[in-house]
Image (cartoon, rainbow, N blue to C red; front, side):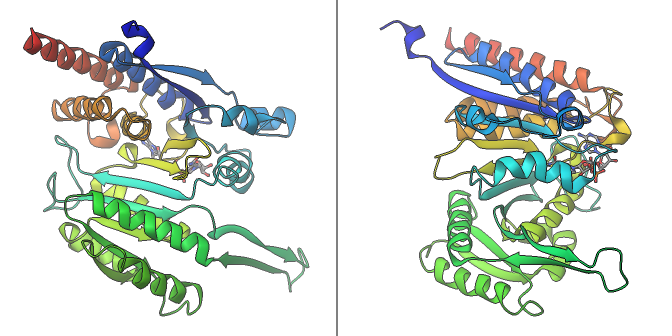
Length: 370
Ligand SMILES: NC(=O)c1ccc[n+]([C@@H]2O[C@H](COP(=O)([O-])OP(=O)(O)OC[C@H]3O[C@@H](n4cnc5c(N)ncnc54)[C@H](O)[C@@H]3O)[C@@H](O)[C@H]2O)c1
């Protein structure tokens, strides 16, 4: 068999969508193509889907009929951000992002955070290594289950309900996934976050399920926090945390705080995983479409690079994923940073610098072998 026949191939759907989404996805595709070319042991086939608020405004739909079936044939989805100033946010979010996450049962949302070398945390004493967390967010139900309604619209007695749904099935599978995540990390330590003092039903069930699942992982140490106290611990004692698990809404908020504490929302990645692998998983930066900087060429692409690296790990390309992160961190350390990280580089300059760094790294590796 020729070496070419042995090459691994991964089919990636890209959906840049809105605002800076297409800008950071283009940057990530450029780096991924360079990485695959330099590595030579795998190839990536990209197919772009032009689904956005623009298509919604033209056609009334974010995802055309049959769109999800097309998406399902890919190995992974690389997603930018959805949201436009002239479309209500709940329409855009439910029309595109949640319309993929929910039917594809991407129930585990994984959000690592760390301080990159060469960047600064707004926390005075936190250095690279002091804040190194993975937040695992329930991604299929909870506060974002979409249950509820509105009646008596516009009248003084108008009523709206937003019902949080917690099912044993979904909490157990997520809790187990979170403990497995903690088990794979060196510290083997997880903090379970709830609000079981005020929310005495669903959150108490979360706590009980944590106790049950913890018994399956005797090598994982764990503790628990109420979500309000957790915000203080994240700021005052970041070293005391490692893996964190929380509900859909709580972890959504905590992970934005985590990104800011690590230096910028512009560096933080997300994986929306279907751990059963029956559906493709979706990888996206945490940030949104950032209307204020769209089209200016200054969006930080690092969150999407880290996202792409997480995607490579999911696809089994661990070595390439590590090289990508090493290259990104070498670039931040050299001071090639966008404005949100205190620098003045453009998206393009950071992207080109990462590609150059990869070339140097692969060159050095080849020279060593020779
Ligand atoms: N997953 C998603 O698609 C997603 C997530 C969050 C928000 N949104 C949507 O995005 C829109 C804007 O939301 P928002 O303003 O609350 O959040 P946002 O993340 O878009 O922006 C918040 C702030 O962070 C800055 N920022 C974000 N990403 C950056 C990057 N890569 N580099 C440099 N700076 C960056 C922005 O300039 C802005 O000042 C809304 O429509 C919202 O619904 C979408």
